[in-house]
Image 1: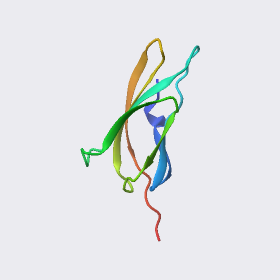
Image 2: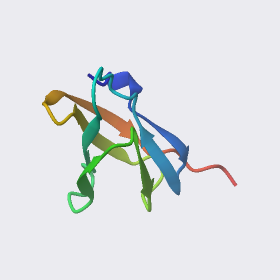
Image 3: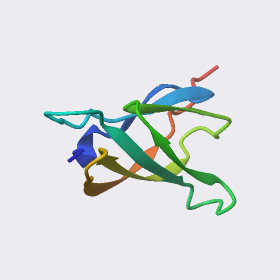
Image 4: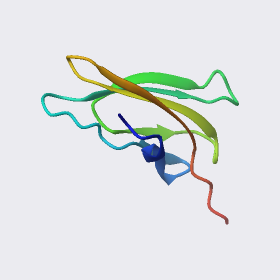
Length: 94
């Protein structure tokens, strides 16, 4: 299981990583199903599968709310779904 509090953003507003703690698996490879939804704009969002415990995000306005759903899985089964609300990083003051 991926704890909700471990889903966060790292970087600046123009390009940042959405990161989470890696799932623990005693045998084999771990993959992740990731869904990112932008409630403010239903046309933005994506679903993907990755083997990395992060995803690089670009071209999103500063402090945009994201609804993130992550589920770890292996060749043998799926873990529980974790959902968190996170925000893209704020822009820096000029």
